[in-house]
Image (cartoon, rainbow, N blue to C red; front, side, top):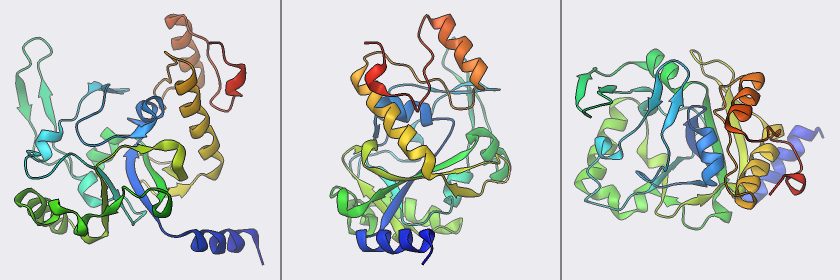
Length: 245
């Protein structure tokens, strides 16, 4: 029996995995926070290499009056279509006024905005706060019904979604998937990177003020940024016990 088949059998015994879908626009922020946060609780804006600062507003998706903020997951590894159906608002930095609203961008521009797609897997048996969306009280509310309807309109199945009203610890992640292409994203499993992710999360927890640069920076650019900030440049695979306090 091959190693891949043995791994698949071991994972089947441990139970199903659900995925939080994100992208390299935000992964450095996730590693620094150490958790998959519920809607509207992100502490920092994301930075795009071409567009600069990008913020998302959870209230643009729903009013969050019918049920509390939740973190979203799905049992499907394929990128949800609703995440590739983006609406863009350009905001005046001085006045805060929304200057332009674009219609839904379509998949290609949404992918360019998101950069490389990423899915982070969590085992249900190890995360009791993650429950099926269809069993959550919000499913049957007005907001929930609208989310379900708009998801089905773009070909997604909300009955395969899961939610948590509590942040989920990234050290409990068991899989990392990512796309090598921005414009034609196909997720591949990166087992080698999971250890680095856990290492970076632990590093941020044990070293107050530790900064992880945006994932899209090239290695030398990240090192230059560290020098400019007066901070050491350390590999994500480094032994955290050797990091300066």
